[in-house]
Length: 119
Length: 110
Image 1: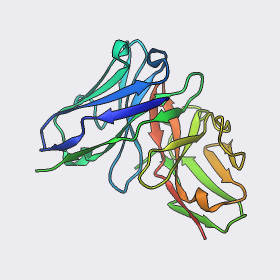
Image 2: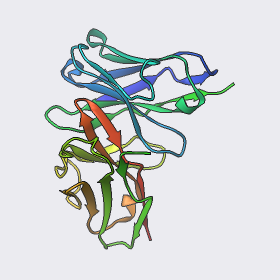
Image 3: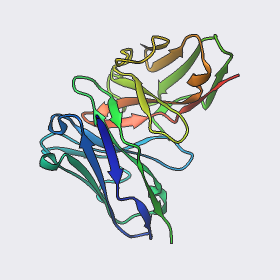
Image 4: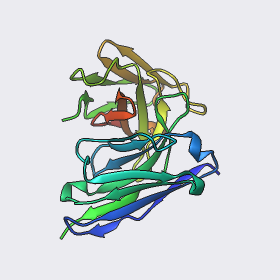
């Protein structure tokens, strides 16, 4: 089955760190640019970060630049997001999303993992 | 403040057609030719329903149609059905592999 499955979310104090993992299955992970998109409770979607298939280029939203790091391991079909210096406004469901090949759009999404930043 | 503005809510009766607009409020969305739309029901992940302004992925109902005029992209839902009640988000490519989402529109089927 073609799917993405996030894990690693939880409750963390302001200033703390967390590592999110996205496990991909059912497709050739190494062919795709991958992204993280987040959604605060009751809020809209916000693109967070993208990484191309070879990991040569990484892109970040201004709101997370310098605090979050995206990476991937194609051998393990896994995508990661390292979250550092967390703030209350980072509280969100974090989704892993696949950019479609030859199309501009996120054509496959995981179920998301909740990150709560609170003291 | 998102660079893409959507109405907070749109409603319609079953069988009617509705249109959701997505207006680029600054020039930071490039040529605005890489617009996608997502449907999200409560508690589940978003689902791609339109990409590259007007193309439907395989399996998406033909009742969903995308278009663009100037700096406004639109999603039209024809023949509204109860299952269409959801949140809808537009998204545009800003620069290579960099994106911006609209604030979202809640569609209510009366």
